[in-house]
Amino acid sequence: MTSAPGDITQLLAEARQGNAGAESRLVEIVYRQLHSMARRYMTGERPDHTLQPTVLVHDAFLRLVRSGTGEWSSRTHFFSVAAVVMRRILIDHAREVRAAKRGGGGKLSLDAGIFIGDEMSEDLIALDEALGRLAQLDSRQSRVVELRFFAGLSEEEIAVLLDITPRTVRRDWKTARAWLHSQIAGTPA
Image 1 (cartoon, helix red, strand yellow):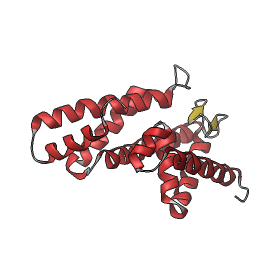
Image 2: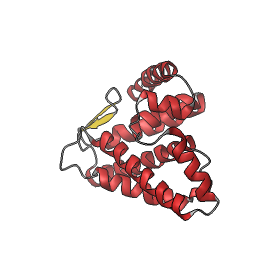
Image 3: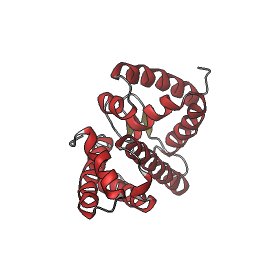
Image 4: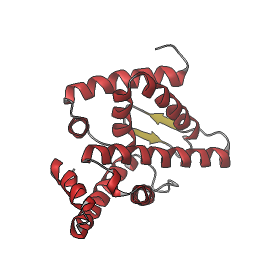
């Protein structure tokens, strides 16, 4: 991320107090970082993929703005919300693709944190459902997956956002990934 960890938190606090300059700066930083996350996520996609990074970040940004900056208490909170918003957009897109094409041969890669192919609807929806079940068992692991897979953040960035060590992020990612694979494949964990 290009801003210092405290920048967004400080700007959020100033924006809540009505500082228009802080709100402007916040929009600039946040939009740029969201676009960077979307670009990282879409790196493995074909150039003609139906959901482009700019569209993803634009939709996410609009949804985040509509939710109101006053509701974000910190940088961690903001990026947690951003990851959930990106996840919802991607799931909605996958459902639209599934409805339009019924079926598909795309592959979902939890290892790389990207989708392979344009017809990944079924796998993405299965992942979303499994991630919901994981959230009931271990909310932190679920958040790690959201931030890593849907928001495209690195282990170090997730560690800072969740106030845990990178080693804990790696352990949660490895455990959650294995559990999610077993859930999607229909085998016990």
